[in-house]
Length: 45
Image 1: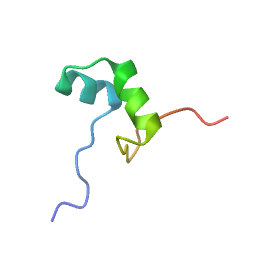
Image 2: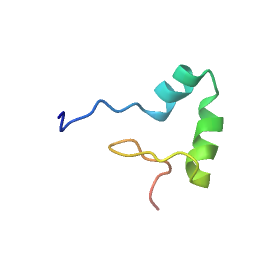
Image 3: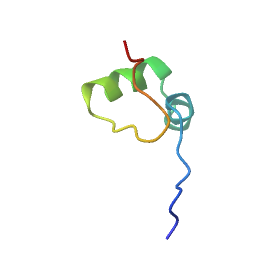
Image 4: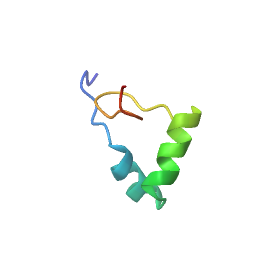
């Protein structure tokens, strides 16, 4: 089994789904999408 899956950034996922990056970010922030790995939903304060 692959231990290092290839992950997409939110921008790449948006292009893949044909949606805007802002819409994908909104879904991720609402918890509808689970973003794992190096991609972060929002910057830490």
